[in-house]
Image 1 (cartoon, rainbow, N blue to C red):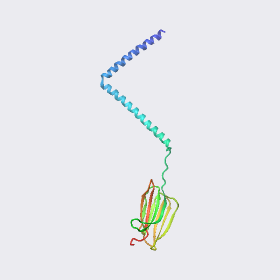
Image 2 (cartoon, one colour):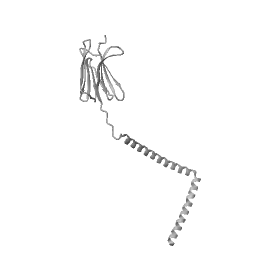
Image 3 (tube, rainbow, N blue to C red):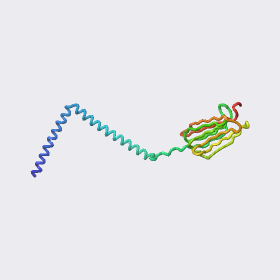
Image 4 (cartoon, rainbow, N blue to C red):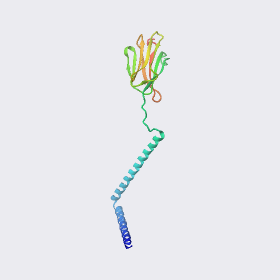
Amino acid sequence: MLRRLFHAVRRLFLEVREAKAARERELQRVDDPEELRRELQTRNRRLLVWLGAMSLGGLLFGLMVGRIYHGDVGPRQPIVPQVRVAQAAEYVDEDSGKPMYRLVLSLNKALQYERYRPDGALNLRLPNISLIGGNQSAQVKTKESRSFSWSVTQQGKDVNVLVVGLGGALATQDHLDKKEGDHWELVIEVPLISAGQ
């Protein structure tokens, strides 16, 4: 019993001494502005680190919830470049009023193509693309007894477009036009009458 009483008095004495030392430290801190400034800077740094960690954690949590909610958890499939013959028809040019033949290829992705003009013909090579709908070709006869043929064929990984004049050189034009979304059109135009008429 005496022992407990002794320990209780001793604890009380230590608490009083500790409280007195704490009061003295507080008074010293108030008296020393440099010490007070350092302590405030330390507190502010800790607070900023804590707030930054909480913000980053909230952001990461929000991104995870967003990916799960929208179902975008897997990697996206790459777009496989594809081409198909969209149109092959005669028309009258609005600007010149001359009859023209238009071959339109529809692409799902923009690409660089190679152009060759061997002996008045037009040869376009579209690299690393697949042809939808299989190989296609046609022969077109003009009113002037001139004719030409065109073909769109898959050759390995490339698609080859060939426009050849039968009985003479052709004046062809080709250009790539952007349509809505990621769709593009490769347009090849052939005049159906010679330039002198």
